Length: 588
Image (cartoon, rainbow, N blue to C red; front, side, top):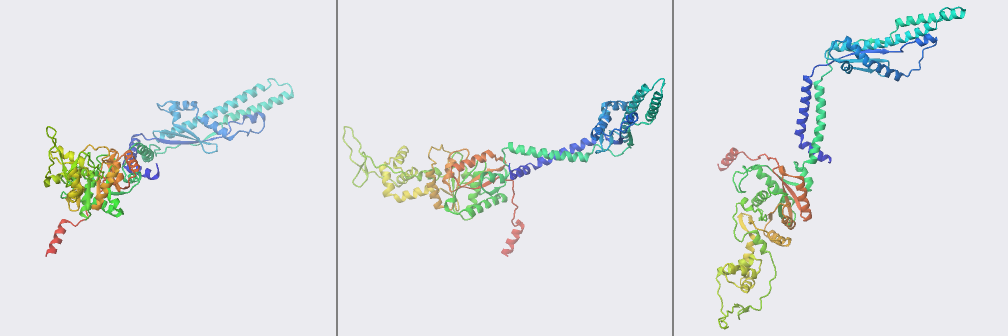
């Protein structure tokens, strides 16, 4: 996911992120408020050497070879002994166990110095200070007792060496020396503190150290923000929906031509000519019309197929109101309803279905297939008219007779020829099935010689469709089972070329491009394609499928119309009261 995609994902889920952060902060704040207050007290200990008994016994200098880091670690371990917590429990009145007391106390060294801080946390300032002092005092007592025990062992060792009855001068001198050292050790024992001193006792601090609701709420909000962003990115990876029109344009590789606001089914007018239509809705199609007029360069680009990735995205709505807007602006517009499985364009344009004015009639009229010459069994009279020979009983032939046709017969016959794209044989069969016995050769003669002008008019009328409004004509569709090859690209190109010669814009409503294969043929034959995307229902997979289908058909995607885009155009019109006042002033 690139930076723009990340930004779009965050922007689309910003309310969810904000809700998660706010809820997490409130929960942390509320949970902190219901917790009991905790207070801390700290006492400082100064550690030195345990004892100098060895130097007294040996008479030498004290050993200074101790590693400072090791001695500091030893002091911390000494202060954290279970025996210390057990001794404190005897003097500190509480129901807590020695293990709980030990957990309530932390022992830390201040840098590389010999000062160690004993910090206790309890539910009141006084008890916290008392617990810290008890632990510090117990450490001092433990160190003092250990030092005195060491000195006593040294005294005992020296007493064992003192001669009981010194007889010689050397024995007496040794006895005196040992007695002097024993006296020094006794004096050291009485004054020894184990070289650890309680340099600063803990005092009650009335300020609670925990809980801190504001700090906890901020921490919870930051953590929730990070988790929410991660969740949004994960959802964006898993969610197939597309909620941003910029992402739609990026996926399809085309620009957005217009954004159609969502009116809801109840507020949408039944057809394009309804009164009191929503100004924002109409203004959106004015933007679409203007953008099409600005980007249109050649005539072929004015044959525009309108499709969508999936059914129900509003393509027929776009065709109907765009045709209205172009027609009202003075452009000659021809609407073509090629959605033969669900033809609805005539409903939007409020136009009836007229016989012979449908899109299938126009498609068949574009065929220019050569016909075979008359067979040997067909006889023509001296004037070039067909003569039919009817066999009489007994094998005698009836005389040739000339048939007479009314104008209605001629019009009906040529209409059928135009219907079948000039194929007189198929037209003759259709007429015979309908009760009109007009031969193939007669139809061919009318088409090519006797009534060629009438045939040209009938054929052209089938391409014009029905007139819906000034500057707007429609070739209606019908629900048909489309046979294979009916919507061939060549036939469509011929139809579109003929329609483009008669109008400024040809708007083709076609099938959804991802659901019906014929939509690709229509898109390829048209000069350009507009893809209508319903924003609330847009899915990334459908958009990519539609794009691939159009690319495979080598269709020219000229733009996107975003339907139900959630936008609204401000009504920039003169208020009704001011309009009436202005018209009244003009009349006066």
